[in-house]
Image 1 (cartoon, chains in turn cyan, yellow):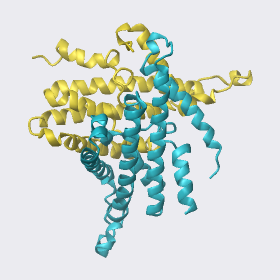
Image 2: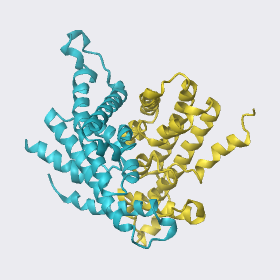
Image 3: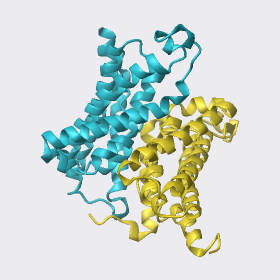
Image 4: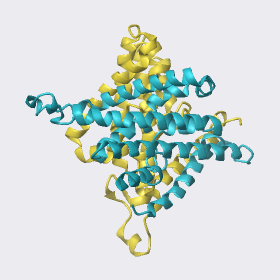
Length: 205
Length: 210
């Protein structure tokens, strides 16, 4: 249990998807103009992350790992499907995103209209795919750890985009050199935020 | 129609400056920042992306009349994913150490927005040969930025290029120190910000209005 909490805190602050690994930067930069939309996108990412990472974990454990198929029949002991992992992950993610899109459209049309094009874009948000790839790389032992990793990474990404949106709302009123306006200053602000997040590196878990 | 008409040349050259995928279109930034601590992984990553963009552009362009528009995203993802699997297996076979360094970022080429962006914006509506050129051009525009950032970060951060030491030993004895800041993730962001700054200072039309 304690291990799961550690993974949770670590994936939010220390291994933050945006500031430590630069993942999901495209939508991070494109959608962070107002706090409201970035909040919506942040929640959608958390939701998709919490579903896809454990689902992919189960698929990896019971279908794709070398010898994973022995639960069907012992004769499958040398089957190794792990080379398929990229394709399976992305298919699961695309399907989940489609599902989330339908759910949001049904229950919250206002949020659906606000998110617009960005919902389908979650499918190509690298943070989501990276969640599954890191899950494979870290070799978590059970589903509880995987769940807290997925939740933590999603929340970490949401925190990053919401705080950047808050800064950008204020930046509108500042006098920035013309060539640096918009994208340039956003990069530099993100760099400074990433420096700030480095102070969490000192936490020992 | 000639293979290298002026229109095709333009497809090849525009991504280097006015249509650069990273600094102008803001596509594919994730991997651009993460793999650029050293020059060698940046180089390998750049080449991999060029190959994947060009090949998947050609494939989608060949299939463009057969793909039903409603499920095109999934079809595109599957095509890109199979190309990336190919590249990943080749990297593991021939440059294992670099493949280890790139870790998850090879897999993340699948979700690299440059590729999806080019498929959506270009390959779906054009013939295979222009699509191929467009893929090479955009991949190369991406690779150029990667190589610049990789070279700057490795030279100032570790005093080497491609692992060969360039700063003479006498400098270190005189008190020169490598800038450890360059190796940290934050510096990659600030460098991209500076590249954008310089590029826009020379190309006034790229400056954002608000």
